[in-house]
Image 1 (tube, rainbow, N blue to C red):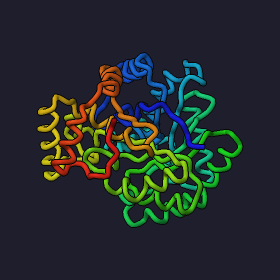
Image 2: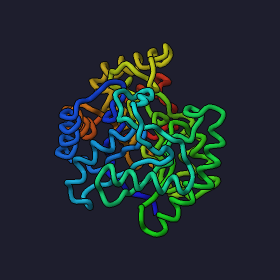
Image 3: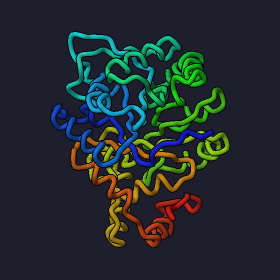
Image 4: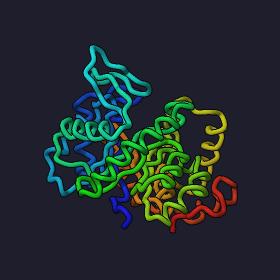
Length: 323
């Protein structure tokens, strides 16, 4: 049976000091605003700020009834105390921890125990094997992937079968590892960041989502704004915006203005229109954003806008459209 999740969740990377430092007061206010706005699915990772995001999320979630929210985190990097922060790009002013790559079964179990301790909660619902992909490790990614399938994947499958967690999958920025995981293991859900959006959706649509639907594997879409560019930010894929992406964004902006559409709202609706997608998780470190995201999620987008995107070649003819 396919995993069920709230359609709109909160991504945790910005609260790990992604791109810029966030004060503890602002982090607490952001998370409280998310709870007050009705967010009940939260995704974090030890990687985000070297434990900082988990620590911050835990300050809120450890005070809430555990059955009232869904929590996911990730495995693949263990944290060990260090004399200084690593400040691994794109994070700044991290906690003083050193990341140790470990996709083994024992590493996955230890990572989960550490996450539970950092957050002060008694269980984690979903676990994603983090960043077993070429964009993170270069050609060596296949070795890490093999280690993960032989180690972490088997440990998480056992924990799922024992009822310790609800399910597991991969948390990646690339489509290919998800396809391979479906061939080699039995995942329940993928967290796919930036690969199903108004700017980039063809590969996932054609090569991954049909198999996910056939196998009842859900997809959580992370990075629906592509690291912020679709929300007016200055980053794409955690870096500067390439010229071709900026040109495509400008065409989207022009159509959004023409039809009176907020492009952020369109980005959320687009992701959720695909039947393979079970949740979309924009991130923020701004206390004003959670309520805005809720309003954008509830705001309708005209059919004429979607038809115009198809007519202009910005969406493919076979992409599922809202409504």
